[in-house]
View 1 (cartoon, rainbow, N blue to C red):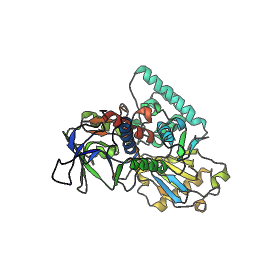
View 2 (cartoon, one colour):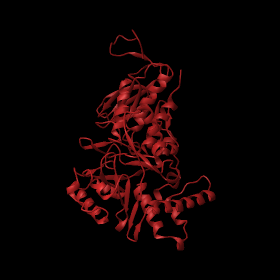
View 3 (cartoon, one colour):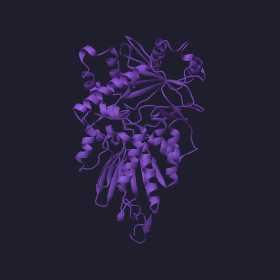
View 4 (cartoon, one colour):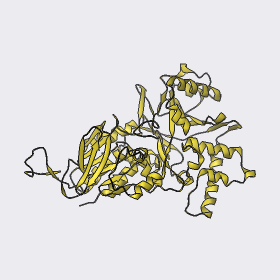
Length: 463
């Protein structure tokens, strides 16, 4: 960054000459780039901006990352139950395993600095009021519905439909109870939407990372720390507790206004907050918001998803022969939940809930949640001698759906809408998992991260 000396008599103001490619103008600016949000998209964007400047032989850009929370990582949140005993309350599984684009990026960049497990769901069990299905349930039903999706594509090329419409394609006399159970599992548990008519078939079947996964030992916060430490080393500034209220642009830069009255200016800004925050206009983006952005937001729907985590004493699950990653989906009596046995070096039972149930659990008394989950685990018949005596800490409950800075666990596309990627207009860009591409993993950590990277590349103009 070159300072043009003597430009002003006021010693607290300087005229900067931006030389990193975001612009090459003289303008009043504190920063070259402001990033709103320090989740996967924001962290990825900060590092990519620095990478591009370095590749072009330019000085490091002066970047400010504004984060409303008192921590970094967004939905990558790891809680500790004791020394070396951690679990992810947010994203925990890099879908697709070793081919996941974010995993490949991180493992190349931080080789030897963290460890991970490559997991795959084995022998999943589905409990229903009509019987118990073994591991073939998911494979058989997925194939059945994929054939229905292919039939739809043949009849209506290039169009989308909902999971409910796929189900309706099955002749009445051929519909099975398995079909109905699968619809419930996909809509309320796996896609976390309120109803099957809200689940895009394209969103589901074009997921490139449908099977397998990578779990980071020590939790996703390990990657957050590595990314943040590298960014700081590259002169990126993080400001926590900074709640952005508006991002406005003028001919020579952008202004970011915070709720506490502070104002920051820069050459350009990118916004990576949750789509529900943008839809509710908790952060406004000036007066000339393009129709492209409004359409993208209209095409998203909140995925209400929650986790209830019971940390267990070491050895309990091993004694039952259960290893990471096992899954029991319980659809009995409309319970609609999945119990996962997952481990990133530790052991726990994790209840995953979707739809209205996910909203409800965040407002329940913690003691009642714990008691209910223990009873549900015991009722499955798959966990002998289970009770509070095998727990090593209190129950943990996510709060993504009720949190004012999220309003959802993530977002999925409505039927008929595509994932068209990041959006920029003038000096402002928008990224995040709602603006990801299907090929990057869509509404996942990988999709969010890659959206930040893609946005920087889109807005960067080499000198």
